[in-house]
Image (cartoon, rainbow, N blue to C red):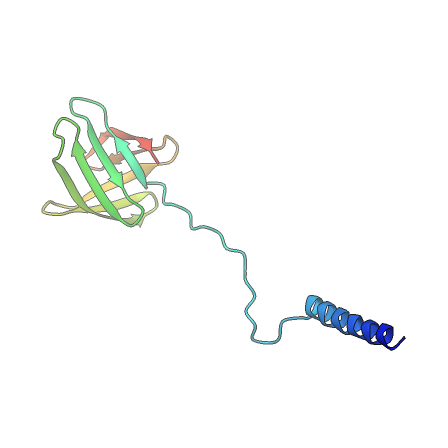
Length: 126
């Protein structure tokens, strides 16, 4: 009988500890994880290409780096950085060259260089 009472008390104590741990509230100053959302990627990030007399490509990398070149001249490329300067407007600073402005057109999902607005570059990779 003593074994049965002792065993029952042991089970009750375990149950109290388990239930207490499941329903306890975090104390003050305890951090609670909030849901997070991934930052949205800028729409200009990706690879773009013009088709015409020469096929130019532009690559806007997420970390603000920029590459461009012409497909007929493999291995020759321009490197630089890009930054957003307005709504759908971007400044590209190319190493050793003058700065260039690009505009992103969301309705057609294309970009153009402001010096040659008629030459659109279409997206070929996100």
